[in-house]
Length: 425
Image 1 (cartoon, one colour):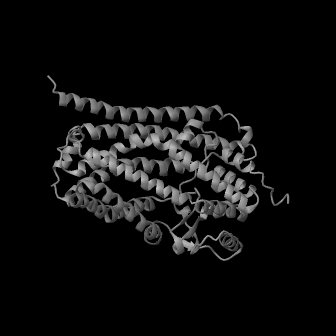
Image 2: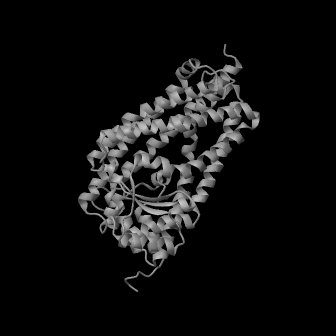
Image 3: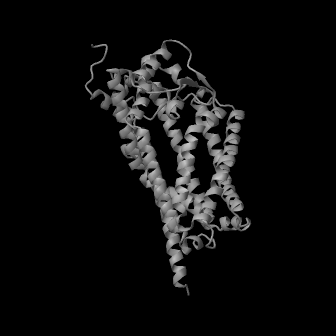
């Protein structure tokens, strides 16, 4: 006969399986819903987009969307199977038993599992880059560049992540039951330092940054920064075309170390007024304090995460359910990180809603600053066209996954501002 304790373990095991299964079912359903919605509009360019894309480009964007969907569905199933196998096959406790219980070796255990999971994801990443992206003309990376990127990432993870994990495990030993507060504070401090150092020391390891050449574009963007009192140390071009034809713009760093960065592909695709509008949008995020709010939200979420981890780490069943003996924090940290996605997935719509709201506000800021929504509208249209974006996502799918509103939603919001265009003036 089963003991009462064994019955509890079985119940918790089925709960974990349910968490994995329900998440996978939701992902598959959302993908199916979106695929059906895209196919329903695939016959011809919808009326709302006939001024934006021609029929061949639209059909190519549909094909691109469906190709990514197929790859994502296969990978979702693979990830769910791998997760279930790791949790319930007993392989993790076997690996763990091979490592001594010193802090440095406990960290080595965590790193070893992380490297194993990364290795499992490499074939998918490689296929996405050199098959799918290549097929649609986006890939510009070479095999050498791609593998060097992974090697650099591995070295950085070991150089930065390994000591950080050692410190967290040491904090558990030093601070007792309050370890999670100290660990949270340590993580925040590490993130703050990296925000300053990453643009200077890490990003240049992957991309080349050069000052935007003198000329009308530089003068226009400098004037925009001065007009908005947006302090930036420099305006730089990044060689995004080294890896992809996708484009973007962002600013990085804080205070006098802040830099405005434009992908070289973006500069090639947009006119100067459109580039000004894109930069005005990015400045809008800063002026509306979106960055600060997102950092505060991230800090709050990480605090809740550490608190929950600390509670679970005290539960003997949490260890024994997955074949570990209680006592060390490393197994609890690993299991928690593996399972975190089954819960955080359901918070995606809330985070997405907040992010999309910020995008609307940044759009409105840019349009108001330029006294005309049309440059930003034109830029958004070109970016969606050049990137073969899905113009007709299902609303539920975009609500779950999209951090930005769709093109049509952004256009309608911009046009509703009632600003007079400069041309009309």
